[in-house]
Picture 1 (tube, rainbow, N blue to C red):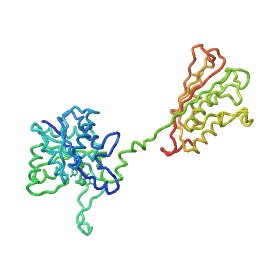
Picture 2: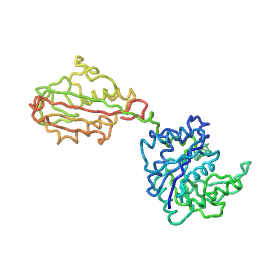
Picture 3: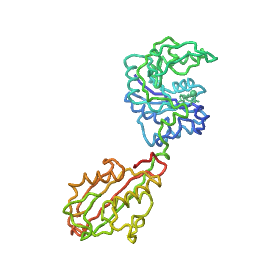
Length: 402
Ligand code: CTP
Ligand code: MG
């Protein structure tokens, strides 16, 4: 069997155009490539596939071919990719695609590029059924809704038994000689159909329905565009802030790290409570907000901040973050000190910091390192801490953090 794929991308996308979409849906940019590329890429991963034909709108044939050439240069698929101009109806585009197939082709998968979510597994199951000798195989799924037949006045004329109904999808897989014969009949008899299987049915040939994929939907109406996820420019772009702080050891305040007291550690000289970790963390958050540093927000010339609890100051920074519409997502903090040993207290610090940030502990990381006896930390004269905070700026994703 020499299996080829015909990918239909020649429609006018009129239902989306009338809702204001300015490009035909198959050319809509998604994940850095036009939508039709997604089906092409998925089908090209089928090991049995010998090649593809993409059917483009005749009015934009040259530019479409140039686009395909660029995409293939960027991401080669390792298969021949031919093109054919489409026709007025879907079935005309299929017929044109079939006539572009090389002589050795003996079977074909006909696929709507408006169904970008098919998986390689679906294509493989269709190909397997062909290999088992079936000449027409299509994917279908059971229906959740009851279906009514109605007349021109909207009056119900029949209710088919739901268990016997399937909503069918593409790719549809055929023995090529059979599908060609079906299309020839359609042309001769003036048949007008909405899928290729219908033509084969009219020839009286059996068509097998295998299990389709609920996710393999067709992008048809404006609400379907949501299935493509946010546009590139709508993807939330997080911001990052960096903070750094140093405290000198010496008579002053009892040692705390992320509000956790560490017994046996030297005292620190500080105007506030000297929590070096929370100070670096606050500066990192302020970095995300573009609000300078804690010295600007809480000047040490202001007696109000004398021995101020860093946890309360952090609360104020978080309040500022909320007011400005930011959402703190993650904090990575490194304590640099010869003494005290941070490891035994790491989990408690992590939990305390997470609580203060309104995050789960998995979104906070606490590390510690020495400087190998070098510098002021190595000489046990003081401690330093660096923090990196990631946040979502206003207008991007839900706001929480309490
Ligand atoms: N198609 C095609 N040639 C046509 C009509 C349709 O190649 N003359 C393709 C479409 O590009 C699409 C698939 O057939 O991938 C299914 O058609 P549909 O979802 O109806 O797309 P459009 O016809 O483009 O959209 P609309 O019906 O809203 O105009
Ligand atoms: Mg259509």
